[in-house]
Length: 120
Length: 120
Image (cartoon, rainbow over all chains, first blue to last red):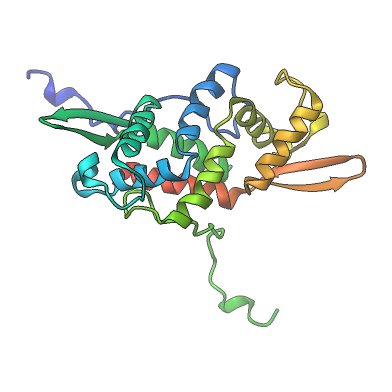
């Protein structure tokens, strides 16, 4: 591409969901969107499944890779779908299985929300 | 104190609640503790109240300072107590009012959990 050299190197794009929590009170709309993500991680089984996907080789996993959380495969599928609906995982079907992967930008935005709040 | 000079300058202590989510799947016990904190922020009203406290002058607020979230004072009190039970706020009674303050170490630990996961 002809303009490749003039494009600056960008940091990975982080979803500008909300300001740091110490900056100002969230609006109702911001809180609605952000609470949905926190809520998705607010269930112990879902949080374990999320960490199972996030820590799996290659940063992705299918239901077939997860067997040690002590819940049935349909339950695993259900929770992974919930995490996807909350925007924390993306998915791709390959043959029989749906592979889930963490959404780094969304996670980074949530992390910054808290980390900046803590540092202020 | 006589040994002040040999003590290294320490970063603020961050609760070692869990490893970054990309490192390994959380254990059931770790997930139980951590999910409780995420769940506390997983309600829109509670999240707005939390940001109201975190962004208030001096980093603390009492129920008397919060009037614009559109819920009654007893409801505000109820949610602030829930945030305290989850370890996200500490409180101190002064005269008539209980003042709430964010717990920076807990927030930082939650933030790192997500930020490191996102960076990996």
